Amino acid sequence: MEAGKLLLLLFTTFGIISAQTFYGQSVTFNKPRRNSDGTFEVIFYQRQNGRESCQDQFDFECDVGVCSSFQKSSVVQTDQDDTGQDRWCQSESFTTANTTADINTFSMKSSGCCWLTNLDGKTNWTAEAQMTLGMRSDSNTFNTCPVTTTVSYLRVPQNCFTEIKLLAYDPDEDVIRCRFANESTSEFTLVEDTCTLRGVGLVSVGVHAFDIVLEDFPKENISLQHANGTTQMLDSSSRTSQLCKVTMQFSLEILPSIPSCEPGRVLPIFLAQIPPDGSVLSSTVGQLFQLSAKAQAYRVSIQDFQVSGPANLMKTFTDEPLGKATVLLEKTATPQDLFRIASLCLTVETSESQSDLRCFVTEVNKPPPPAPQGLSIVTVIV
Figure 1 (cartoon, one colour):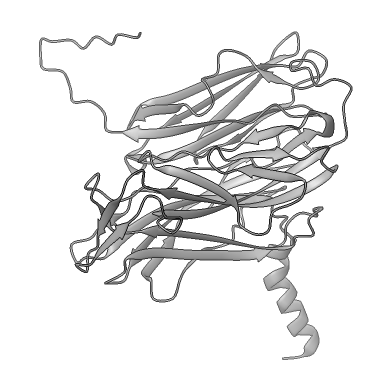
Figure 2 (figure 1 turned 45 degrees about the horizontal axis):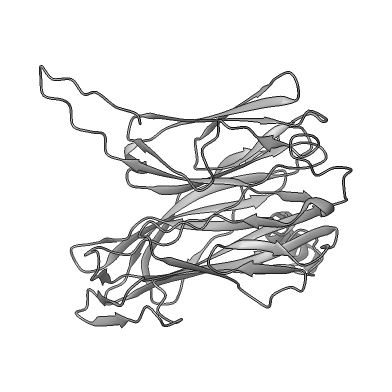
């Protein structure tokens, strides 16, 4: 092949992906399911953050010898900047993997380029996930990994930044520990048991890129019974007894200082209608899930709500008088969503700043059985 044509082919093949600006990613697992032959079906959901268009996701790959099949769904763009500035977007896909026989741990990895320009000098990134496939002695079921995510584009004025509490939820009520994947930065600390990112002094204006690892540990000593007949003992006091490990990447832009950090003026604030941060919100298959949030910033205009949620979540934005705005999120769960535990995060957006990060967990259950004929079901709200 001629040199010029080869260069054009390489640019065409790699240029599209390399040109994508990487803002971060997160992965959430369903509980693994054991097949009749002792292998496992593992389903995970991947969210990737970027700018302008997020349709081209990077792919995960199983570690050597782990998977016999690996089938990824189409990529759905779940959120984008609706102000016309193309500042953020997010997409989601799900992958169904089947393991090979005699595998006790499912593990996979993804890597790529390029982070958006940041003060840390990061360009390439690597994401990893690992989960045990043993039956837990304390619950007689398989482990469920920690649930986490952020919105695509976090930003805080320099004089208003103190901390960001990241979502870290464990469906099994295990102990979650968070840490930096690589060396820590002198401008930030990460509180291990609450997964809270804190600034050290006045942090530098610009973009900071983070790689965070979340691991879950049993609260008491347990054993894991594997499909190949082996038993693994886990000591709850050991730092090597993690049941699952997931990596989350996200970026944080520290903006120039603003005149006032009083919530509700230039900094938008959520009003009381929204559930408390970290709430678990339940729905059933076939039921319309709705979440409404109202916010205010009476010195500036609220432009949008940034949302990180599952695919096919509908967002309706309504501008209101007196610096207020409302967002309505709606989704009807399908049979494919049954037993899925997903993250849902949102922020309020203005041209100058962003509200605090609010995150929830959504779970989809079976619908209740129909009431016997002649009886009625009364729901009491307390």
